[in-house]
Length: 445
Image (spheres, rainbow, N blue to C red):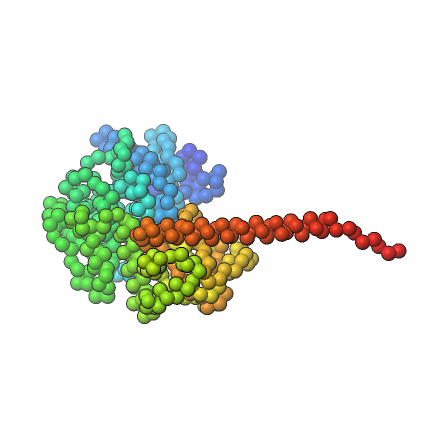
């Protein structure tokens, strides 16, 4: 058993938090930034084993290199890597609690269906980002998806990830977790981003049912099932599974690449629609599309939208209603949507102070959405308000004309806001100048 080091580089090693076949994970502390970190340390016996050492070092530095390239809120951050004596170590974001999605893959611990959809949707967004940078994970499974205390996700362990542009740390060959491998992965074929989509589909299946789509006593038998058999219907394993999730699973687990989701954005978009549908089933509330169209046609934000673009906006958006005092957006939330006020008004608050009031036709949240930053203010309804929430996955599926229309409207809104700010600043300076130039009255003696 590996003895806990007291320090690695500048990092204080506090306690062991996890043990694997090839590495131990410790909770550490960075005294310079004053933050806790996770320190993954390769087991010395692995490094000393000549038959394993070269491949493991390749995996270790592959993870450091590739994960270090990725900066996304749904991917575990890698801060540093180093060698000290005979110890290899990675320094990563520390996730308190240490739960993974594997904790919710048994029939007695299943999460509510809307929460499952939300978590897999976030995984899709993280994978979409990685794929856009030519990175294929190749080992998506529940134990490699960490769950934060506020039930957010972090995709971890890029040790066997493939960088499509190549590199000398790449791990080659058929490697991964057989139960989650795509048909093309177990066949040793060239891989694309669609292999991660298949693996994430297996995770979704397992989170919904507590079972894997394919199981067998031997690897050859398992491979035959993955290559040639179809998984059981979700409804055969769990009665309350809605039909639209059957469609999502079928597309995610399709053996034919032409039938499978072509990218993680499309997968996430269908999950978002499923989440909306699930909310409708739960609440029993839905506004007719024609009524939405008529209401949005009167909203100033959509004045320049053609009818076809307005219909796309309706399909991309989620119709939300809030009462006075209800919080629409929390400061610090992860930005994945922007909002248009259809009716009513909202107040922008920062640290308890009111900054401004927005009314019907105004939008908010677009700057954080574009920058990927966290929300910088709270948004509260000041009266009964109807808000159209536009999700990133859905707008990315809209036509280019519709996306450009949103961009132009945002730009016009930004110009108006800047002009208003400049005018107010100029007015304030003018008042100050007048005050300074005004003659002082002499005191009567």
